[in-house]
Image 1 (tube, protein in one colour):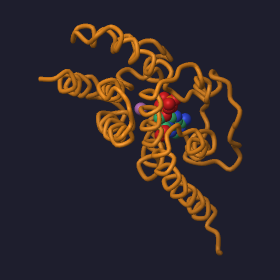
Image 2: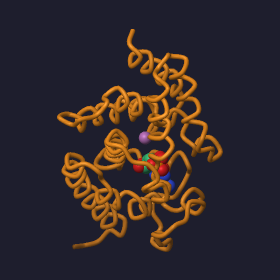
Image 3: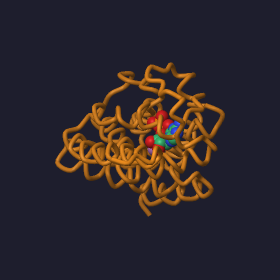
Image 4: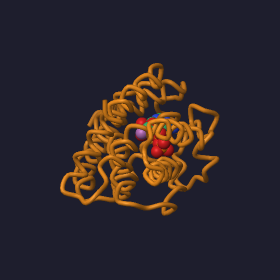
Length: 215
Ligand code: ADP
Ligand code: NI
């Protein structure tokens, strides 16, 4: 078995009881999208694939906000698998700096492999899947779907972003609608545009049905 095959089994096992928006199926989609974006690019595909597979191995928001736990588990695992230390370092950095966190991790690390996996993860937050994941997460947190009295908070610091107990519809304004302009690669920008437009239409319809508009 290759290191990738081993890693797939490891991740599936670890994420057995994960919330449906951050489970093996999310990892699978990010892994596949990462490979699609990598086509024709000069990258270390092993680093791309392993980073995609491991990127949510222990998400901070399900581990009392601990940002280090995921990268640490990945490093331990890859060391055990005998991957070259230089590659492990690279994967560690990708995992450590990939997350959105209200945009506060931006510019702290860059490589082509990082850019691709980050784009793939962000694409899975958009479109039909993005909508489904967002409502699933909101339900998991028992957040209200929508409340016209609660305004979206656009400029949040890291702590505010993590603690935000807003509505699921507000999450579209606070994060999802901002993602299309944050894509790193040309391929991801194209996919993002289409998924973005679909979400805009969804939110518009959601509100018109919520207020039971006559028009
Ligand atoms: P990152 O790890 O990059 O900071 P998240 O893991 O917070 O990003 O977001 C991944 C997905 O989880 C989002 O695209 C969204 O679907 C869902 N999600 C995260 N926070 C919220 C929230 N407050 N309300 C609804 N969905 C959320
Ligand atoms: Ni992810």
